[in-house]
Structure formats: C-alpha cells, structure tokens
Length: 341
Image (tube, rainbow, N blue to C red; front, side, top):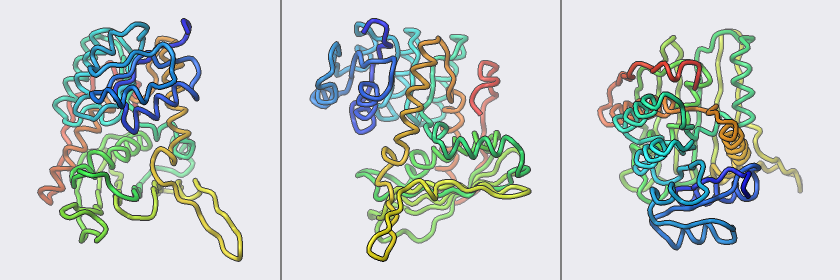
C-alpha cells in the first residue's frame, strides 16, 4: 500500500460512502487511509472491510491520521470551510464536493487562503465536467462549428426532495450544478439572475416552492434558463440544449436504455444522480488521483467554487425578492488564470 495515495474521506453519508466504495473498488492508485464522520457508527460501517483505515468522529483528527496524503470532503456544506482550511494548513491536496462553501463570504475566505499559499490545492466536485455527454457538448461549442452560443436550455428533475429540503436549496444545492456547467460550457461568467415561480406542484412538500424557473444572464449576452423540479415523481433527469447562431445541440435524451417488448417500448429513467452520473464520478475521482500523484491540480478550482456560491446566493435573493439580482464577483486572482473554465 505504500505507493498508493492515502486519502482521508470526510463524511460517510450517501455521497461519502459512495466515494469510499469508489476509492476501494474502482479507482487505481489510491486507498482510503482514514474516514471521519460525527456519527462514528456510520463511519465504521462505511469503512468496514477495508484494511489500514482509521476511523474518527472529528474531521481534523482524520487529516493528521497516519498515511493521509490527500483529502476528499463529502461532509455537509457548512463543514467544508473548516475542512478546506485544515487541509491547506497541512499542505494536503483536497477534492471537495460542491458547494465548496455554501455562503459567498466563506467561499471568498477559502479562495483567499489558497491564494496566500501561492499554489492550488483544491479541486471542487463539479462532476458534470467529466460526463461524456457534457464533454462532447463542450468540445462542439469550443470548436465553433455552430457559431456563438446564444442560449442554454437546462432541465434538472429529481424524483423527490429529501427531508428538510428548502426552497432556497433548489438553487444553492440543485441548480449549483447548472451554474458551473453554464460557466464552463460557455466560457463566461454569469452576471445576473431572475427566478420565476409557477404554482407549486401538489407533489411538493407543504411550503416548498417547487418547481422553479431560473434565468441567468452572462457577460457576453447569452441567456441560460433552468427548469428545476425536485419532486417530479418519475425519475432523475438532466438535460441541456445549446442554441447557437448556426445550429443547436442537445444532451441528456439518450443516456438510458430503451427496452422494447410485448408490443411496446419502455425507456428507463435513472432514479438519482449517483446512477445517472456514475461514470462521471469515476472519471472525476480517477483524474484527481492521477493529478495529485503528479503534484498537480487540473479540475475546477476554488475560483469556480467561489463563483458558484456567489451566483447561487444572488439566485436565492432573486427567489426571495422576485427581482432581477446582479452577480457581484470579486476580481479573479492571477493564481486562477488559465484554470477553471
């Protein structure tokens, strides 16, 4: 095990447990060295069957565990700032699930801390950048064959929302993926956001404003709309159509199996994001491990995490006020020139 990258996984819930499985069974070049979760029984369950792993209720203690050379943060968003700053203080490369930090002030503190280090250590878990369909769309748009992108039409649907999901979380949790995908696909920052609210679906929990229609403006005049519907009841669907000057391209329609039998056809719909984006998560984690072992950070970084937090925060204000809200980003530090989108 000595030549494998030792990873501390912080958070052993749904996402963290899946990453632990991925590091152990799918990704090459790495091993789980430590697992941390306030629920110690859950941490032990996630680490069961692995050798050479220490289990901790305190995430900072896991950073100092024997054999830890890198960190994967899969804990709830409010715990991310402490984990990222702790990793920076120890010079540990870190892959942090989105949101990097839920609030823009905390995200700015994390970015500024990395800038003071003078080198990138953080990659943020915007896994759609590793999805085959998204990568094909990105290459098509970058190639220029369809001309300048004018609009992106996006759909983000979930079967049901978890307990405690709020109206604001439709934007700062669900739509945060579309925020990053739009910035990356278009190579532009988002400059303003408006949120429209149709009558809530009867399938939504009482008080939850679901669905929502989110409209983003970009720095070079493109528009991005997102239908977000987290209690659609029938499956997990993510689609994106780019409408350009000389054509359009759509992804998300064919990512399922179609079964024909008995005189009818049935299309399978993924039940959740871990199924729909399983390959993307695999590629993301493998790319992070490979880059980390080379001493590099190659994926979306702290600037991308900060930008997503600022845009999402503006979106929540737009939801609450019904007004168009401008996005106010800090100047982009030179450390991130040529990185991110």
